[in-house]
Image (cartoon, helix red, strand yellow):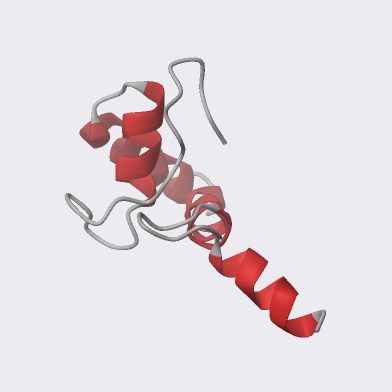
Length: 80
C-alpha cells in the first residue's frame, strides 16, 4: 500500500516492540507511535478487536526489506 507521499506501508525493523505493526502504521499515517499503540490497547480492552487487528497487520503488512507479507508467502507456497 502506498500513500499520496509515495510512502509504503511496511513493518520497520527499528522502533518496534513486537512485530512493528504500530510503528509501520504511525509512519504511514504520520501519527505518533504512542497514539497508535494506545489505540491498539483500547481496542483490545473493548472486546479484543485490537489483538485481531494487530495480528492481521502482522500477517498482511510486509516487513522492511521484504517484498511480500507473511500471508502472501503462505498463499504462494500453498498454490504451488
